[in-house]
Image 1: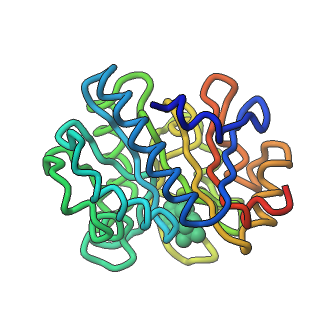
Image 2: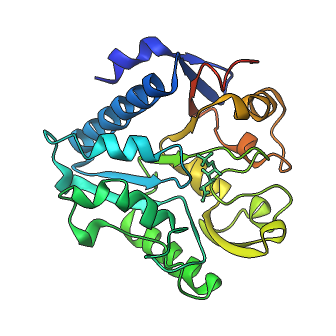
Length: 248
Ligand code: 6PG
């Protein structure tokens, strides 16, 4: 159970917990166990597990591990996404495409419980559609788990520094124009993530050590959107390998 994992988890501050694992593979194994135990607990309490998946490269190894978890009631899982690019689902840049082709398409999750963000639509319409879907599908505590990564500029999901989405307080999902990428993204908002039961950061590697230190040690600020995730009531969990945590 989760208490078996708690030995690795310690409080970092009043808004974040942290688990530092020796190497990348150990971190992924731990994150997989944490994901599965969180899912089992949600299913035992709520008869389902609602999770928003993150994009990027880091979680792909976790998704590959999940497809080997056969002794599990995948029919109780509801998949959502934390963010999406403005591309169709079959595009290689799509976070939906990335997660499904990393192994999730082999799981017996009913297709009616897989809710991708519609990157192929006009972004504001896609955001409005996803917000309506979340409000219809989820309870007050929104997601049981929101998976997140960390970009080297301090972005998480598609909440990039100095972009409009970081200031949104009234929406759960928004379209966000990213000037330096010259593209629109779809993203869960800070209030949506912080209203959910648990936000989980998965961060690996030497290249992230400076931004990990900055995000965790700086005060919460919109110039570093990942620093805004986590509350006293709903602490965010950071799962790191030793390299990413090297200068904490
Ligand atoms: C995306 C992700 C993004 C990602 C970080 C870290 O759509 O790209 O949502 O927030 O999690 O950029 O990505 P890596 O895991 O590849 O370093």
